[in-house]
Image (cartoon, rainbow, N blue to C red; front, side, top):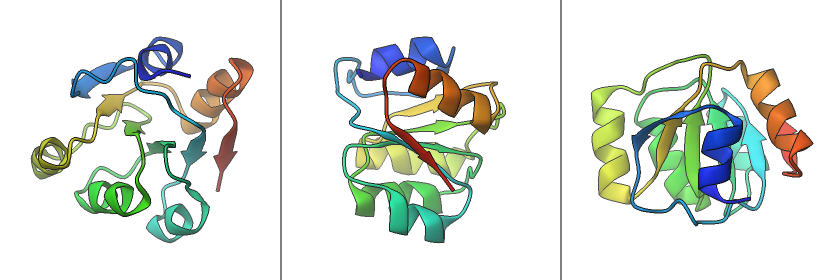
Length: 115
């Protein structure tokens, strides 16, 4: 699934992007715990989370994730956006709950895991 499709499916607002609408997402992973992200996420994945601090960007960089989507309408902190720009990490925000976000992506054919 392409990032532009993810944005459409989740009715997500683009917070920051690097012209990566055609970039592929291999799977999705949902978690609000960094420790779970480190054990479950795979390179090329989309991360669905409610964590808005800069540690989520650092974790995504370590895991070589494609993008992050903040759920429940949570807006990333300013330092999180700044770090995402430095690292080239696309950020989205959806008003949907994590559960519904996973379900919508799964129904469109994206493998999604949640912790």
